[in-house]
Image (tube, rainbow, N blue to C red):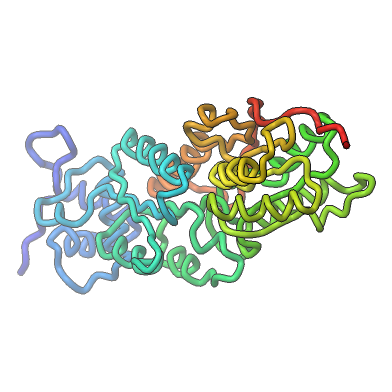
Length: 355
């Protein structure tokens, strides 16, 4: 006859005591039998990965120390998957998410994709192998309208809490945290229209991305009815990079643009570069509006007018929803939109007088 293991003590307690009661507590929270809890605490085989994770989550949530043999498995880990770190908005998200996770007692595991390197699906498998309690995705495959959504459906089927930032997709039973891209364009275009601009161009990233599609829709709506302008002709989709912003700007200036709205602050730097190469002064000859308000945009020349993304608010919401699910609370799976804010600096001015 096998003996029942002594469950771990609560954090800060001395003598374990109450072994049977604690087994019952863990079993009740995880929705499994006490025998299954015993197998997990003894690190025995024959327990499904989802069930094992449920018991480990119960240990963390109920405040029990993990047995030493289980501490090599990632106690209190949350995966954080970002597409890259060259665009400053992604390190900004990572920093904020890590701060909120650390404050809640969890350790983030940052996974950064690089061209030709490890991609999202491989990172997710690594995270699952380490037994993470949840994953936050920032602008992942969910943001790409050409990518399948089955990868996220499979995670939800195993009961793993996830939050997806910037890129809503139908059919995924999860929490989406999104910047309101349509309102972003309304704010930018309204500002430029009030300054007298009518030939306003929009330089943005690849059209397959959901945020890009929403911003294009918002731009076209905001520009509808502007006399003498076909809004569709003033949109250029390229790469989310300095070079992409510069290339789009040259085309938009050729099309008569007196102002350019960029899909990101990084692209806006390309707009500024192209303007100088073309001999145009900003904002006297060409007004420029960025997007995101990442650090140091107030120090470029001229300081960049931009539309701020509420990165701290979005990061906190994503972390909160994941931790609530880990704690067994009911979370409404839907999209939460965060309002942008127009930040006025010196890269925009009145439309130049026609010569």
